[in-house]
Length: 597
Ligand SMILES: C=C(C[SeH])C(=O)N1CCC[C@H]1C(=O)O
Ligand SMILES: [Zn+2]
Image (cartoon, rainbow, N blue to C red; front, side):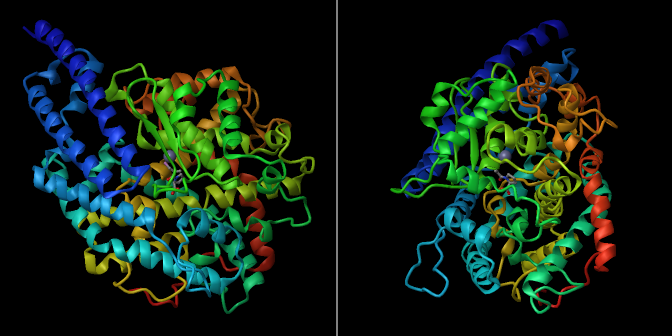
């Protein structure tokens, strides 16, 4: 009868979940071994382990089909079976599975080991993306030098990945179909468990676009003031290499010469950290201390022992920052090539946020050890970093003596946050709109680069520094495209983190709407146990319930909405509109004169 089989089902699935934890631990260890020491031997071992594990997953998957779990009464039990009823890439036959793994690791190792020759010094050809090119894009204000490095990197990491990427699309789509999806786009979107996910992304963009266009217009004017009409036009897109970042995804490195009130003291914590002899470890210790101040969980001993927080000198590793769960309840790690700078301070918090999520949900079934949706996992660390980057907190930890709060300082602060958070949204939206089109076949290999730049121009209002052709493949010059990592999660994160931040600030008594002494922009939840407990209650849920339930637990809202972000930046939006009116700057952009299709 149903009762007995439901009880049998429970015993079976709990056993299967335990075995799945052992498999995921083994897979993570093999992946860690490869990405922390890129050698052919470690790549072969990783693929060998993945193949063996996929066989075991297939057997487990066959067994789940013996249970009529759809009829079970217990919500969690049904949800566990539902998740285990989806096999994933292991549904591919062995040879195709292996081919898919090889094409992805081919792209990823190319990206991780690509070396560039120095500008005006062709004999020095050992520059890496991290830390070398990252540093150059953060500091250089020479358009020709930036153009050179932009072109070289996109050649080495983008064009060279085109063949592998084309193969990966084909094989990953086959895997999607074996999982009853039309294509990978539908598979990726199923992670968000809402039928109108793509419409929600579009709606949010419509809400944020007016603010972005105002910020874009202001920045273009300030760049034209600096580089001249020849380099930055009055009504066109902004050349992508002048925005302080290889992908123009965040513009915080151009703050020093574009901020609204330049005579106000600049808040440059990179300089302060270097002056105070900060080390990478100190940044990690400070982040850990912030989480502990909220009554959240301290990083365990193994974390400090096993993590790799600086680039090794004796081997090649994947430097792109990552946080790891080894699914045994005690081994959690971060791997990143930290440099003492404001950007990496933010990334440390971002990665520590992932590990805190792992710690909060480590005692629930393995299958539920994930973000309520992928965007939630990306939002935890950033939400904490919104408090850390407040002038109040930076003063508290001695990283800035900054002016007392006045209207101009506040606009400078909101501008600093805006060129990090607002400008990121059209970039993130572009990256997966592009890939949705590729997986759906609307974008074919001979349109890859043309469609990529068309979206970049339409949504971000940026243009390539030089002519592009289909010999190029600029999308893969971004880590997540070369590493098969979905990107809409960051778009979601940059929206929901402001809903989380607002809720936590109210719980901490740091934000009271209409109370000018308790403004959202000044909120710092540091040491608020009440806020920490509320955050913990949401994080402990993992993916055991649909994400609107998790969102409601913390914020009382059940929908992802731009209103948190728009409320936070309201004063900046008003200021930008007035400033662009004053200067007569054209809002928006006409099509580019650079040939890319
Ligand atoms: C830091 C990580 C690892 Se999950 C990352 O990839 N991020 C964090 C913000 C956006 C995105 C990027 O770098 O493109
Ligand atoms: Zn992340």
